[in-house]
Length: 294
Image (cartoon, rainbow, N blue to C red; front, side, top):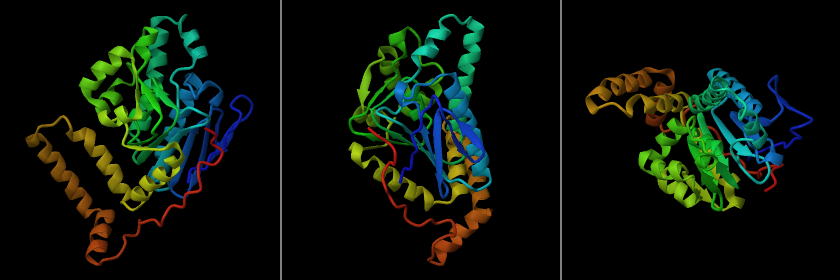
C-alpha cells in the first residue's frame, strides 16, 4: 500500500505529527512512514526549501524510530517523475552567489543527504519517470531502490558545468568508482537495467507493479527485528574499509551485543520454540499508490 495525498505545493501544506510541510506529503500506516516529494509541476526538483523540509523530516523520522514508532520509510515522487534534480529557479539564484554562499548552500544539501542516509531504519525508494542529478543522489541514500522498468537515471551535473559533489560519497558507495568514472564524467542518462547492473537499483518491475514490489520488500522488513536492522545498517560503514583483522574486533562485539539484547534473546528463543518473534508483523495489504498519477 502506498497512500499519498497530492497537494498544491504553492497554496497548502500537509501536516502530520505536528509537522507542517509545503513541499512534502507524508502519511503513516502502522510502523511505515510514506513520504512523497510533492512538487509535480517542477518534476519534484530540489530547492533550498525542499532540502530544509527533507532534513526536518529525516530528523523527525529518526526521533520516531528511536521511540519505536517507525520501522521503515518509503520515498516516492508525485506526478510523472520521481525527482529531476535541482530546480531551475533555485539554480538561477545561485549564479549570483559568492563562493562562500555556495559553500553554505551545498552544506545544507550534504546534511540532508547524510540525515536520510543514516536513518536507523530501512528506507525504500519508489522510482518512476526519472531520477536525475540530486534525484539519483536521493536514490543513493536509500537502502532498497525499487524502479519502474522504463525509468531513467543520470548523474547529469557536468552537462551544466558543475559536478555531483554532494551526492558523490553516497553514489560511490552504491555504484563504485569504475561506474562513477563513466557516469559522473559523461553525465549520460541510463536505463533502470543499467542502474541495477551497477548497484544503484535493486528491483525492477513494470510501473503498474511498483506498489506491489514495495509492499513485498516492506513485508520482509517487518518480519525482521527493528533494532537488528538498525544495527546491521550501522555495521556496514563501520567495516567496509577495515581489514579482516581490524573488522574482527568490531564484528565480534557487534554480534555479542545483539545476542544479549532483549530483541536478540527474543529472536533466538522464538526460533528454538518454533514460534514467531513478537516483532513479526502481519501481511501488508496493497491498495495501490493512492493519489499518484503517472
